[in-house]
Image (cartoon, protein in one colour):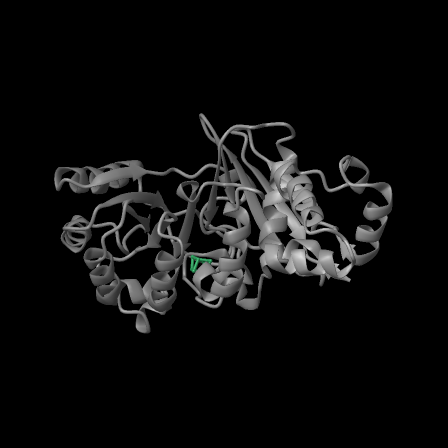
Length: 337
Ligand code: SF4
């Protein structure tokens, strides 16, 4: 039996017509499930009973199961999701002023082992299928009931999305398809530690999707200590790529600020030089503690000094005191626990 969520539009059409049904039934099916969020076949009112039965006999429409949710007073909700093989991932729903943001996972665990990140400390288990990425989005949409406002998607949950590029690509096609979930590419951000080859592919395939880059160090040597991936993917190569390519949006640089490690004004000076000439904004994220690392969060004064220095250098800077810290859903805290 095929799992509906893992099929591309073309694969679905082929399977539906293979059952002797008309091609438009595949469109109706996608509209009900992906667009209107109606997973229960009883609700597919424009598909005949006979055809609904045939479809449920041949496709598995079961979503991955949310087995626990934790909420904090700001409206942030963390979902612990059990996959069909028993592995667990986390997704986060964040209520913003005028919209919702879904923070989506792309892998079970992560191979990159960033020192400040709980997921990295779990190690890598496996890539998510495209259907498992889509299933997270549908689950979170279901949580919002009949909300019809804007939704932003950020691939900042567990895993490095660009190390699971083919499944990410398949999911992005489905997520942005107007007949399906229909999220504008401009409202989607893929966050990466910098897998240059696949970053280039992503920008070729989806020029309107936004990129967020985990910088976290003011030079490659310092970054390597926090992000071992920098031994293979040199920071200078990534920065050069960002500087040379013309794009419609600015690159967001994420900088987790850790006391005594990367939070000096010399670091701020180096960061300002590094980003010179790149249309960018920088998010300063004061370190969010987790059970795996022994780092400290800098004082508010230190965070402000760092941010102000960059502002004086002409950079657009946001300080992000993370939401969802109480429920361990903030940046770097997801552990599938
Ligand atoms: S920060 Fe991202 S890339 Fe680094 S270990 Fe965590 S999930 Fe992986």
